[in-house]
Amino acid sequence: MPDDPTFVEQIQRELRDVRWPGPEEIRVRARRRSQRRIAVATVVLALAGVSAVAVAAPGKSPAPGLPAAAPTRHEIPLDALLQPADLSQQVEAQLSQSGLGEPVRMDYRLEVCRTSQGRSSGNVYSILSRSQTFVPSATPNLTQSDGVVTQDLFRLTPDAAVQLLATLDDVIAPCAEWTSVGKYEAGGARGTGMATHRWAVVQRGFAGDGAVLLRHTQTQAVDQKTGKPIASVPQPDITAVVRVGDLITVLKVGEAGTELDLPRLAEVAARRMCAAANPAC
Image 1: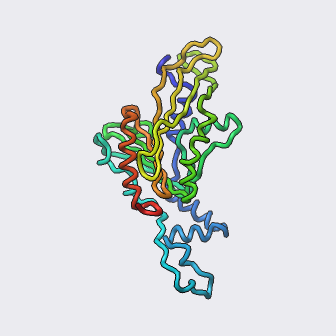
Image 2 (image 1 turned 90 degrees about the vertical axis):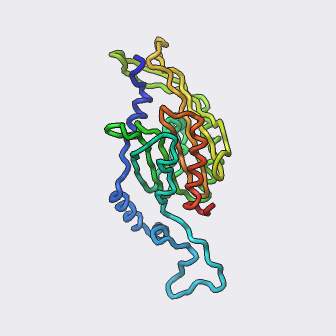
Image 3 (image 1 turned 180 degrees about the vertical axis):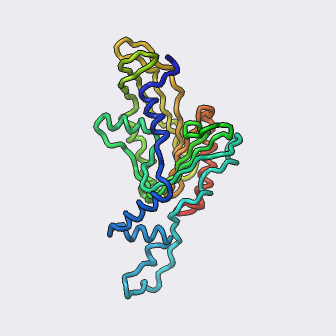
């Protein structure tokens, strides 16, 4: 039936509701990492908000005559994220999460495509992250799938942030056209379904220090044996990826949004990221 989910859509729904760790769990993870000698200096610097030039060996003073280093920002403040007033429609509620060491995930299906070919996931891992979903106030029992706009904001090392956009074409190249195959159950019928996925960069350089629009399209899922359609043709998914300094944001619009909405939101997001980036704009 057209309204029944394909196996890919079922996976997508499950991943949308993946639980992000709460603040206490994040603090526990941070404490565990701090016990590792190699990570001690990093954690101390991140929590204290000081630059490496200010750290000296015991009993020694910093070398005289060195210019003071610009303060390095480590946390991601809430005002670096999009705000309700930035959206073109009224939004009165939002779901927020935060995390440590999370992957910069643009499209989980892209990861599946790559790993199914024996490749790495292609993910780059962040230092810190914040994530939010804007939702209309009339939506009961809110979940991320009800979102008008979703935003993930990541702090990476400066080199990793630059490389993420520089290597994006190489990441998606093996998945320019990929056929997924899996079991399905729809309207009492069962079988093996298949659909073809495509990813392409359709726009660049419209915001921040670098930006891309990544479009995913999928053919109608059909039964592998009979060729009979088992779901309707899904709408294209558009993702905006924007870099400002060492910050990367990933933006998606909900079903009511359009590809034209994302460049404008990306520009606004880039301006909000400026003050929190290393270096600041």
